[in-house]
Image 1 (cartoon, rainbow, N blue to C red):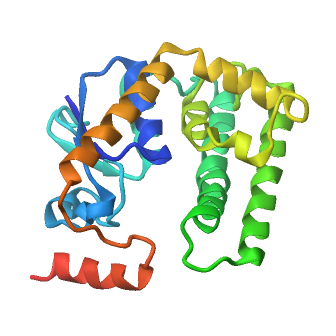
Image 2: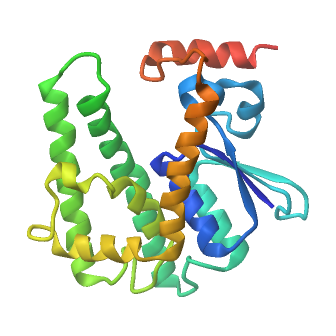
Image 3: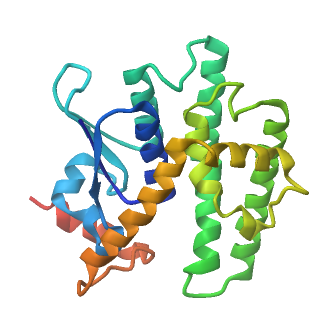
Amino acid sequence: MIELHSSPTPNGQKVMIMLEETGLAWKHIDVNIRLGEQFTPGHLKLSPNNKIPAIVDSDGPDGGPYTMMESGAILVYLAEKTGQFLPKDARQRYDTLQWLIFQMAHVGPMFGQANHFNNYASVDIAYAKDRYNNESVRLYRVLDNRLRDSTWLSCDEYSIADMATYPWTKGHKDRNVDQTGFPNFMRWFDAMEARPAVQRNNVMATEIRARMAVAAEGKSTVNIFDTKDNAARLTQATRT
């Protein structure tokens, strides 16, 4: 059994999709980051960086429980555990790892910053919006160019690179990314959304958000964007 300690953010969803694709038995353990649950001592034992997602595999590499943090590493672990979605061919394997790291190093950070300055920043900073929105569009162009030459993101085989990237690209309409200007990306995006595991993920993500909202009613929230407090929260949670 895999326990996924997470929220249905893009990084959480990439692991949800992988678990649904592999057919592994798993369950979602809700971690509401708006309530600061990522700073609880229990979660920090799973994810010392106070982030989601984290997993606990009851049947780890040595047959005992094994815990992991970092969504990209989790995808590689699950791929190797099941023998699925990470090609055996050496060239295709390295291609997959390249595009997985491309998502982790570029798509996630840049799209995340654009989303923050567009929707959550306490001050309207035109420079920041322009910087991250422009970079986001450039990255969609990188994806479109790649998908002109490849059926899936890393190769002609569906892989963890596709699963990692898809949840981050759901906001493509906000960037005016459409069939006219980005036909290869849109072909891929539609193919992703046609997959039953992805469809199940999208339904579950909505259900989990609703469940977490009900559970949070009447509770005080933390400002997760006020990063000056995060070091103090981590110190308090790990104080012995």
